[in-house]
Image (tube, rainbow, N blue to C red; front, side):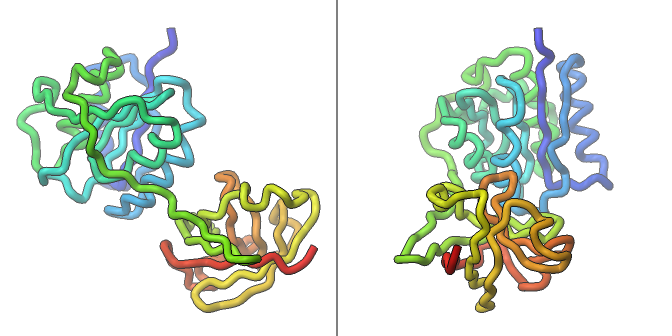
Length: 268
């Protein structure tokens, strides 16, 4: 029988003892669990970034993996705590949208509001639900994967969705949804918008970011341009990225998440 897996995604960083405390709670309840760290370096309180990290990662995990997420600026408030069961996974965390992108992508089966306090670590801290609510719930869920055991069905929960892309004649208008640590600018423009193009050929695209216009090649690998040159590329998430070979495109363009980006196909 496969060992249960819990992944952890937080904005706690690695300096403080918070992640270690959560792992201790989990292991005390379910000693044979495998704990995998997705990341603990989400920008503080950045729910959208956490949602994108989760969305980009979950499909690579085995069926029935439990994804535990604590990016929780509303901790201690009346916001709900959730278990979401999708076709292949379970998600545990706050009801602030951070679970929604990944859960919706995997098709949500049921949403449970966690309200069975018998499984909480007491006393419950108003500032650390990750340790006192989410960690024990995830551990018990690994032992007994019946979400309704931990609460009641919920129809109303907060959802974040990737913004819609608009197409006007030959112009695609999208949005910057993430900037990675290499300075790659990841947009919401998916490969599907370019599916009629021959991926083996290079195209020139005109982009506008932050009122800056650039004409750059649409490439399939970074080495198709010189070091320091811009390129467009469909990265591992299958979204269009604006990159600068071995440099930071985001720093050069002063790009920010949620800024608009327009893309035009110029020539082939």
